[in-house]
Length: 450
Ligand code: NAD
Image (cartoon, rainbow, N blue to C red):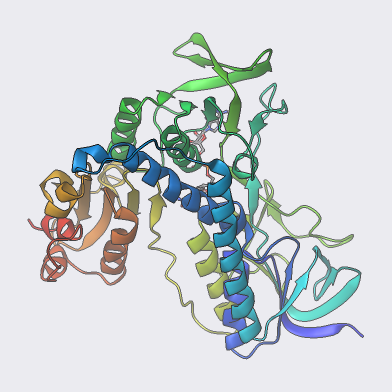
C-alpha cells in the first residue's frame, strides 16, 4: 500500500524545505521529494555560491588597494580552485544544516524525481506516495533566448559559469544587465576579466530606481566594465574566439570574448512533473494559482519561481509558508505586499516599497529625501563612502512608503525600512530611534530627517 502523508512537497529549494518544516511543525505528516541536492537553486547554483565567491573576489579587490589604508602586502594572487573548494565546503555545511532541520521536524525526504500521477499521488523512484495535498515548489531554470549561436561552446548560463574548475576568462561578454548580469560583472571585474555587458533596455537594473542603475553604470565604467544599453544581440559566432554582434543605436557592434554569459531571466521549471492524464492550468510555462496558491486542481498547490511573479528566494519561502497556512484554514503568516529586493554588487543595492519614479508614473505626489553616504562617518572611515539612501513618504501623514539604497550594508539595512512600511511607521517614528555611533545605520536617521 502507498505510504500516506498529509502533504507531499515537490522541490527542496527555499520554498520547499522551509514550508515542509513549517507544515510538520503544524502537526502534518510530510514527505519532501527532491531530484537534486537539498537547498535548490538558491543554495546550489544561485544566491549562496555567488555570494561566497563574491566574498573572496571583493576581498581580493580590496587587498589590491589596501596600500591606501597603510597595509602593504607582497604579490597577491587569487586561486579560483581554492575559492571554488571553499564554496563547496560552505554549500555542504548549509546542506547538512537543512538535512538536520528536516530530520528534527520529522519530514521524510525522498531523493528522486517526483511525478504527480493523480490529484493525491506522487511517484518517486518507482514508489507511489499518497497525500491529501501536494505542494509544488520546483523553481526555475535559466532562460535561453533564440539567439543564433546560443548553443556554441563557451556560451553559458549562470549555472554553468559557476561550475567548479572553469578557468577565469580573459574577456567575458554578459548578455543581460539585470540582477544576475550585474552581480557576475562585479565578480569577474574584480578577478581582472575584461567584462562587457549588453542590455536590451535603455538602462541596467531596469526594475529598480533609475538613479541606482545610472550610478552603478558610472561606477562600473570607471572600473573598466564596458556597458552597452539599448543594444540588441543579433548573433554569436565562433572563429578563434567568440564574437557577439549586437545593434546599438542602429550601428552594428561586434565584441570578442572567451566566454559569454546569458543572463536574460529565468523560466518556471515543470519538466516531467505531470504524469499522463494530469493537467494543471498554465500560463506561458508558469503554473496558475489562486490567491491561496491552489492550482486548477483542488488539493494541489504551487508557490515560488514555478508560478512566476517575483523570483526571489525569500518570496518563494513566504509564498510556500502562506500556502501551508491556507491549507490549514489559517490566515497568511507572511505579508507579500512588502518585498525587499537586493543586488550584491559593490556597493550593495537594496530597495523596498514605492520609488519616487513609480509614484510619479502612478500620478501620486510623494515626499522624498536623500542622504549621501559620503557624509556618514563609518562609510568614510571604512573607505566605502560612495552611495546614498533615498526615502519616499506620504506628504500628508509622513508614513514611509519606500526606500532605495546604494551603499555598504544596504542589503542588511533595508530591513529597517521593510519593518517601517509593514507597520505603517512615519518618518518621525523612524527618526525617534537611537542608532549607535559610528555605524552605517546612522545614515537612516539622517535620511528620515525632514
Ligand atoms: P532579470 O530579469 O533581472 O534581468 C534580465 C535582463 O536581461 C533584463 O534587463 C532584460 O532587459 C535583459 N535582456 C533580455 N533579453 C535580452 C537580450 N536578448 N539581449 C540583451 N538583454 C536582454 O533576470 P536575471 O538577471 O537573469 O535574474 C533572474 C531572476 O533571478 C530575477 O528575478 C532576479 O531577481 C533573480 N535573482 C535575484 C538575485 C538577488 O536577489 N540578488 C540574484 C540573482 C538572480
